[in-house]
Structures are given as structure tokens and as C-alpha cells.
Length: 368
Ligand code: GDP
Image: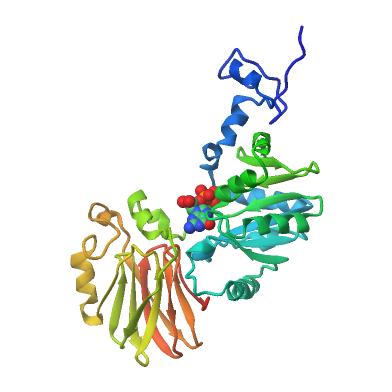
């Protein structure tokens, strides 16, 4: 009898007979230098497992486990959806573990924005949210900007420990890890396996590092207050920026209104005439009107002039909920979770926001 062949990915005994049993690999694959089972091979293509999202409960379990480990936590957020991708539960659970905060999708920010200022801002807001990251870094997993630096920082801070990458769904974790794998050579790609957090059935991606430690990619959690849950795929495409966001500036007088597609509304109630800078996906249409006409416009043109939502989805779209804000600080952002934000420059303006029921609106110090 010949020596059994083991999968270099997960260590299981390789077999070539039963397709749907563990350890299966096609006979042809035995010719390769590195032999892995079909399951690990599929994981190489990765997105098959990445589509899993967690329930809040599962996510709490994962956070709990992280607190018990001696590891580096890499928290990835979407810089364009800072609040929506924040994961507010993290500080309570990480224990003494260091956190590297990585702002992804930096390519979406206008070029005019100084990266150093964004980092400063991220540090300040982190503090306000009760997180004390060891370091803060920006990258674009898509364009590659800052990715190698992120890898170097991970190497520097982990000090032989395991690494856990955490983040909401859609922040770009898979894109990031796929890029890391590419940068570090094709052969390493074959070494990905999955492992389980005890008490959950969810797979984590385990990328072995060269000293025997692992980089774990935890599944993403869905933040419920994001706009994304109210839209279909086509609508989502419109609101998710794909390219550098071009800010749109509106000079408004009191009693004027802006509609953000049909998904949000912004009333300038009182204050001096001033400019309002809108940061939304370039495909989202901002419509200006008089406050006194706004209700009627929304009623008659939602799904048409004011879209998304598209006509066929209007009846499922939740009613808008209003909130009033008195802005006392200089330069603040009014954030519509998962959609974008409006920067208000002057002090002392009173504004009213409208967002679909369940979607968070918040005010923060301006990012620029
Ligand atoms: P995950 O759910 O966190 O694993 O996120 P994915 O890696 O699947 O990415 C979610 C979406 O964001 C995809 O449409 C990606 O193409 C996009 N994306 C990921 N990274 C970047 C980035 O750095 N810049 C931009 N503009 N888009 C990105």
C-alpha cells in the first residue's frame, strides 16, 4: 500500500473516489506539486464562503472569543460609511488586545482631501466612540493603495501572535485578504483553510502565517441601521460609490430643501445663507426645491424624479422619519447611514433631516 496523501490545506487524507465526501480531489489534481482537497480548493476562490453573514448573537460569540485570545485585532471599516460600518460593540470585548484600525476604500474620498487629516479625524472619532486603536491606517483594497503598508503594520504589531480581521459585511475584507494573498505569492494561496469559532457553525478563513501563527478572517456582521437593507441590487448599485466621490455644493437660503434621490431629505430651517456640501455616490441625484413644496413633491414624484427607490419598489419603501438638529459647532457632517453625508459650514444653522424609518442619521465633526 502506498503512503496516504494529505491535503496541504486542512490536513485531511486525500481521496479521489467519492466526490461529495471529505478529502475528495480529482485524480488530475494529484499531479500538482501542492495537493489540496476540493473543499480547500474552493475556499481559494473564497467568495463561496464569504457570502455568509452573522446574526448579532453569533457575532457577540466571536467578539467574546477574541477577548480571551492573545492576538492582534485588525478592524476594517469603510471610510465612506464610517458610522454604518463601525461595530460599536468591539471595545467591550477586545480585552487587552491591540487594535489596528484600517479605513478601507480611501480611493472614494475626493483627491483634494489630505490623507493625514483623515487619519487625525479617525483617531479623534475613535476616541469619542470609546475605541483606543494602537494605530490607524488608510488603504484601498481595490486599487492596492496602502495595502502593503497595512501588511507591514500587521507584521509589526502582531509580534508572533494570531491576527483576527473583523468588520461589517461590505467593508472590503475579502478584497483585502485576496489581495494580501496575491501579493505574498500564488503558492500561499493554497494554504487557506477554514476553522470554527466554538459555539457557532460559521467558518472563519485561516491564512497561515510563516511563523505558524494564523490570520483569521471572521465573517462580517450586518449593521441593521444601514440604507442597504431597504434597497434591491439595482438600487444599491446606484448608491454605492465606485469612483472618487465628487462633492456637490448647494448654496441655500432658509426654507429650502434638498432631496437625496428619494431616500433622504434635508431642510434648511433657519440660519444665514450658506453652502452645503453633499458627499454621495456620483450617480445619486440631488434635487433642490422650496420647503413649502417638498411634501407634495415627495408624494407625487417618489420613484420617478426622486429615485431610488425605483417605481416598482415604492410601495415597500418605509416612510421618512424627521429629526431636527441645531448645529452649534463650525463644520459638521450630517450623516445618512450607508448613503453619505452633508457638510454644514456655518455655526448656528437649524436643519431637519428625513430618512427612512430604521435608517440612522447622526451628526459628527466634519471629516475635512
Ligand atoms: P466584505 O463583505 O467585507 O468581504 O466586502 P467585499 O470584499 O466583498 O467588498 C464589498 C464591496 O466593496 C465590493 O463591491 C468591492 O468591490 C468593494 N470594495 C472593496 N474594497 C474596496 C476599495 O478599496 N475601494 C472601493 N471603491 N471599493 C471596494
